[in-house]
Image 1 (cartoon, helix red, strand yellow):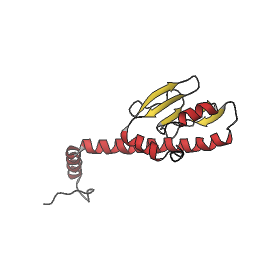
Image 2: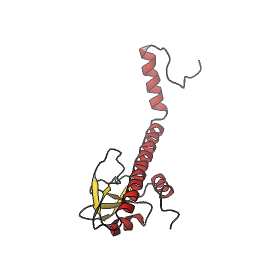
Image 3: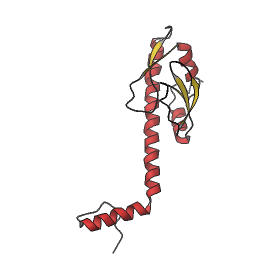
Image 4: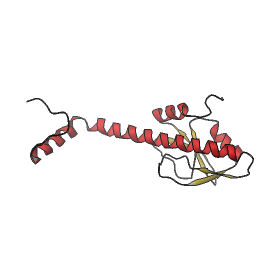
Length: 144
């Protein structure tokens, strides 16, 4: 009988359990690694979207003393607001892999805190693929 590689068809419960157990033994590390890769990609995309939103906000408030920006952490559901001066924001944007986040919003698995201030922190993306995405999606990449 040929090995079934797709989802089970109309099988008995015992056959389904056997199928699941076999799949789990075949490549649990591959499945876990793929899940982590997808999660890191979503996290990087969330950071890039926040950075894009903040770029628009920075243009609108170039002369303000202290302005509100969106936290650029990788949590898609984060709604935290951080306050930075225009000079502080510009210093974060000097590096494509740096993101301004609310304090304690860093992900130690893929980021390193490079600055910590009273109102915000700055992280550098250190995960290989996430750093590549951050550089590719940097709206200022052609102005440097």
